[in-house]
Image (tube, rainbow over all chains, first blue to last red):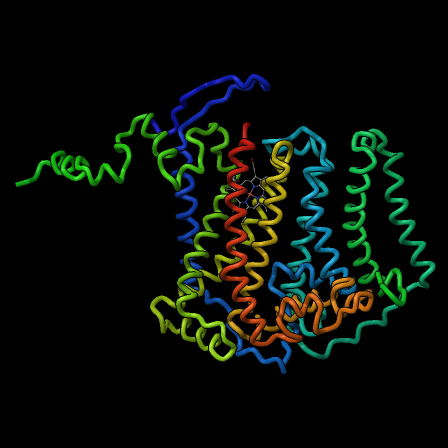
Length: 244
Length: 257
Ligand code: HEM
């Protein structure tokens, strides 16, 4: 018997697609085995030449500067530059986790399941891929471009402690800030219902609101980082209880 | 005198003991190919036959399978490390040095592979999610398995995170400081978060305190990280991976084209 000999050809009653089936053993199992083997070879080679990091004994009296979280959390640590910890470290991760969980329930587009395609699901793929890449861009910044006191250093620059004092930060009056937030979220929720009316109707108000809210939070995070880096704005909304 | 190979094989595989262990012969027949899967407790998470197209490496890039393989690899190397490592602030760091100096056989390789494979798992699980998204494999009827997947993603990150403190070096100590300080900023339930006074949360009763077993990272925090890392999180992840695989089978695998 040759390796990938087709054993049944049945027509799927729904899709009218000819389905050719082959034995899992050895066709799939062999590939899995090779995958695992390849992984083992790589990991042992790498581990033979590169040691896992180990610094000095932990010393609570002597903070590392910068103290960096593990690389996969550096995206969030980078967001700490732009937001207070309650948002960057708690609320945003919650939005990300629950937002991810909700994806299958808010994406009602039945097309594009089971194959790679862009044209049938432009919106979904654009948003998700953007978020995915953004997450890794922030991680790369956190790993390679942040030095003592979380100041910006290019990877080829020497870390030093005498860098120019960053310019002072400012925040708009709370009323103006509130107005800007309301305009951003209000306008952001409202405009697409007119501009892409059929899409809105397809989703219905609940799915639409969740989708747009999550999307606006993601865009808002980017906007805030631009406001901080470009205009030195500290908070959009500053109140005695909570700052955004 | 060369023994007749056929006779030797017949002698080994023809007796009652062999037959009681292996339920079928190894001759390459269609029947045996199926039995190889359904008659083997480790193999039967697979269906006996698969669609030819879902075999293409460029569909899954083997990422889910690889993630699972790394999970098993981490379990094995982790258990071996546990034989050596003591979660005690006075000993943990010295144990790491000993391992790196091969005080235990292959100690350095063991620690290095466990560490790097942990990083690799974070990467493969992220890209597994990306592939599932890009192939639309979360769509009906697989919505729930995507949710299970997201929980697994979080568990993978937490596994890696809790392991970070165990060497008890400056790197892990201050990384965990940064991470757990964020928990202290949780709205309502963290002592530095907005509205903390509303329910009377202070530094010695909030979420951060529960994670650390104290107000700063001391011996109790190391023990907690150790128990989460070696027992609680792997058990949770292991259980959910079973659920994940079972659902892949029940919902049907998405690859068709
Ligand atoms: C410890 C983590 C995980 C393990 C070990 C794992 C393992 C697997 C495996 C072996 C498969 C079979 C197909 C393949 O290899 O691609 C699979 C499918 C699947 N996984 Fe995961 N996975 C994990 C995390 C995730 C995550 C983070 C998500 C999404 C957020 C996810 C969603 C799915 C879905 C929806 C399927 C069905 C795909 C289809 O039918 O094409 N999994 N998983």
